[in-house]
Length: 172
Image (cartoon, rainbow, N blue to C red):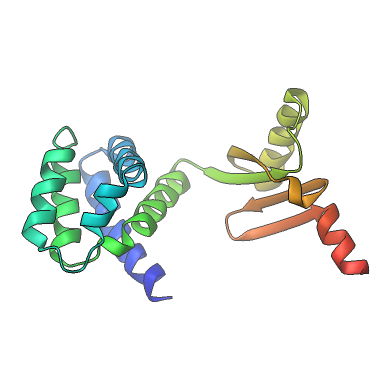
């Protein structure tokens, strides 16, 4: 709960600045690049998320690694580090993306299936999900053989579990 509240507060503050400066999309792209870089580097994670590494060292590393980002994004990262909130960074970024999507009437959907879904079925599913939500959908398809068959659809914090695994669990 605390993580969500902290992430929301920081994301909302940055989003407000982004709207004022008409940089919502650019900052969103910056933040996604930041997390992609951090997520892809164990060394960077070890430094940024280690509580005994001084803030000044973390800020210098971030300034160097992310020197090509917009100044507002770099300043935001510095504030996050100054306040020792780096552990919330992923949640902050996710919350920012959610705010940006809300203003553009976009919803992110995750569809999990046991096997690859054929392209035509994906098109039909995307259209159906768009009608269901009344929004433009961005669908991320995942494959998880453990669900045996069927689909699991996540729209925001709602789940529709139509997997064979779930049906077997209910009758067994």
